[in-house]
Length: 367
Image (cartoon, rainbow, N blue to C red; front, side, top):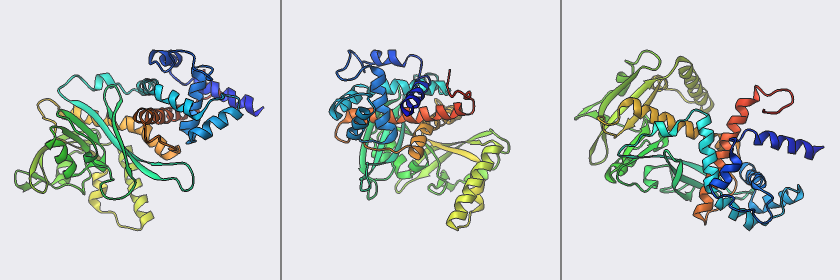
């Protein structure tokens, strides 16, 4: 009976995948011919989800698959199949993002830059004594290609989130969240010929207009209504230079403001610390700093690109908070990229399942 329920749930899960997921396996050459010991592309995918969603090691995955009569393969065969499925997993991610309304192609027009989304996350290997690593990765748009990643220690010198963790080419536009909001990182990107687009950590920057201090709080307070936006030219001070930049700001909706303020107050109460009035005021706005030239990239486009980054990060945040990250193959670049796309696919599927949870029929099937 239990096996029957599991198989029925799996079939319901498959119905939530893009309709052409089987064809995509062949188009992306994940399955060019019938693989030895794998029945079909469905068997491959099921083993991938056992490995990726549950955080099982390759060896534990194939053991569980054998006991459940899903497949009888070796851990080496599973790893090889995961490596060859990199483009398949990436394409499935792109399809699910499009379903969510993230229009990658229209958002990133053909311009003189290469848009790259960067982030970092902690990876813990299986077991009570598993090592902890920090994974730094970069996704390029519009193809959602993982163009760079590396592992560092989770703690220690030069291991934190920073633009300095990534190689920068001339014309790159690097998009990061508050963790990348440092003058040193922005200066590093600029000196390499790139541009920065980053969510502002208001405690990390000093802004100027020429040689005068710029009052950010006073400037944003003029945005009185929801979704009103503003733009200010500023200079960012580093140890030895002033960098020309722009602040692109939009006021949140009343509901978003209230939710953010509640979150800040709850966190402060938990840590028994006082909240500064300016912190509560800044919580009402999305504040983006960019070094992109204003004549080619207006503030609306800058804010849209950051919104796009946030939509993709939702999938990553989902797997960070709800899913064991499990084992990362550290010695093979292709299998590591496939692992990352697979983890993103797990996150997107969890989001989709949650969105349908309130409208499932009593039988439990998505038709």
